[in-house]
Image 1 (tube, helix red, strand yellow):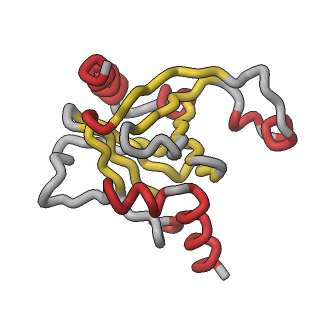
Image 2: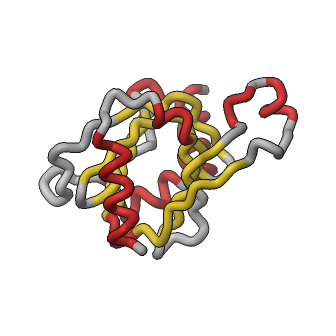
Length: 149
């Protein structure tokens, strides 16, 4: 049952589709220096609460799923050149049964849009990045945004 749930989640979220183009390859991708931070976010309509590991360096953004949930979720590396935009958005005024029961999905989040995958809706909650033990993460993200824009 667990295997089926993880398989369905990788398909519904779009993670499997992104992995076709952005599957992380240690021999090919410049992932040196990426320090991953446990974060929360959404990909399309699938929620990943405190199980996305995200990091960045001057070459791009790396994303992977915690080991327990990583089956069918290959680590991703998205070069800055493939990121169309990263915007800071706010959904504090939006309500849903889930956000009213748990305040996890209220507040500001980074919306990441990709050049070649307009169907991918990636949102990483700003709150989960603010408590980062990796201070250079936000700086690297800001530098990357300047390259994109």
